[in-house]
Image (cartoon, rainbow over the protein chains, first blue to last red):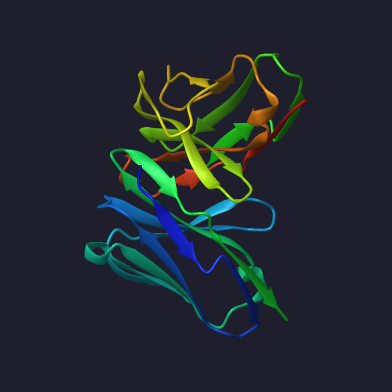
Length: 107
Length: 112
């Protein structure tokens, strides 16, 4: 299967700070998605981003498929951004997830 | 409201007692899939279905069965659960495999 590596594994931020999360993958993929798992365990789709850049409020994402990585930017972080961020890639109809970045935003 | 519904949310059972976790979506999605989440391992795909009557194995299919008799439903069946199947399980669906995934709220299963 496709290997997916996320970094950093853990991140602690002061409220208002910016951060960049990275996702590297080992093979060509058809699509890439970013998810946020909130403290209650719900998985929310943030971005469907096989290539290029997208923005949604304080969050933006960039995928460079030819170099096999994606970045998730969080600006002006808020306590509600806390949780685990996963990237997932799809290859041959299957999805492969990274082990996530655990983000804690402190007031 | 568009959603993926899993039941039950919590389940405690004993080794060997057959169980079914249900998953239903109301978005007319073709692609449905099951995952298990374990600490330090992220989510791993168990089975997926491209459409009605079409199912295939993911990365960790051993000990699980699925069926897709209707487009909206994709139950996960554990014929003889074992303690190593204690995990948090998620069902997800998407319009087609190459489109945004929508997840259910999860089922926490404990097998004693």
